[in-house]
Image 1 (tube, rainbow, N blue to C red):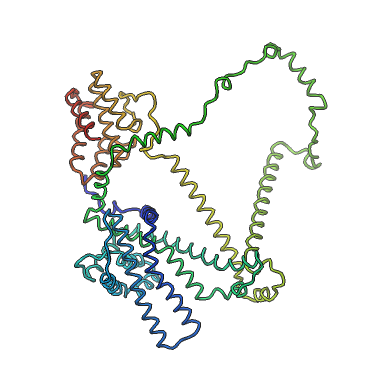
Image 2: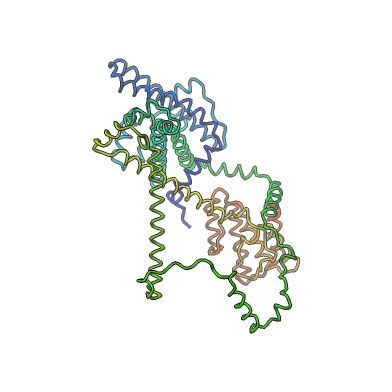
Length: 560
């Protein structure tokens, strides 16, 4: 089999974003340093914009403020590099590096040199669209790329550009997802900031300056403030995503991901499985439904008189009882219109079906009208009597902004409902397909080793070993050899090196193991030799020997 190409090993966009979320959740304390470095620049940027747009200061003050923004921008980028370096060290299983004052100054200078062109190139690339993923990925990678000893600015820029060119298709998908997340957060913040004063007025009767300003509140300072807050909320996830891209991209040459897996495998304890087994058994015991009692489950015999009563005597007695006034239905059927009395069965069925559909449509329309009235009650200006000035301004406006805001609220409600349904579907799908390590208890009947379609997942590795010992004790060396091969497959699947499937052949398993265990050649060669040994006995004419079975069993017992 030829070597797998690099593009076949590209991580998926959703997997990287999901891993980024989990990495941030495991280490939320890292966000304190991030916001300590990015907060001053965010506050200064909003203040500078509001001061320049409202008061029109002289050119000297604008230049001084711009210089201060540049210095705070360098501090922000250096803080982001420190935040990304700590996350990268945690992902690699290493100790985060310690920074001194000289390191801060050197990183601020390096980031100002590397990020200078991004102020022009990133907006231009976003305008043209096509090169945006590469240009934006280059400057984000330059931000999160750790500063090694002896690395110069051009060297880091070259490394960042090489990493930005990796896996372009997943990178485009990831940036599309992150952009959608950014836009949704922006809309939520904008709607919340705009509606909170109106809600305070409607619910508490308090009129503030924000509620009286109306649509004048939607100025450039408001939009910039919302954008800055949105970026502060979403940017840590974006930086973590590029940290993981940098980690996997550099691992193609350094093998850091494989070394981390080997260290974790070596540190795994052999005594952790009994406790997990007890927890699993206890959970299954308490989750099992109670069995009905023998007395309640046993069918009650019918009375002898009822069993012996003939049908010719029982039916007239039932008819006589049902004719009594107590058993007559007291509701009379609705009168049928004269034009519908003589309609046929098919025509009546079709008419009743359309009546039910029309009733359902009217119900949905009533729900939508109720939702429309509820949304209008939350918007500013609706439900407040006597505000004729605002109504006149809205009537003279060439564009109905209130309708746009209403439809935006509808779209947000639909989006949130769709997100909840998608989350519920993912949870249910995850619960329907439990992982192999948490498999249910083995069935009482042992698998038939003569069956060619027996599944490896029916027993764990220890269960197949027990079956091999039983066959060896009975002198069935051929069946013992097959149980040992199935135990080998189950153990490799438990280690995450194989994915069990009914359609896979033994050669498919070997090919998959060669791809996933490239750093463990002895393990791959041992599996290949065992596969040939089993197939020579099971499908060929080679006789199974007790020496081979005992040797294989001893190897599996010594290497749990």
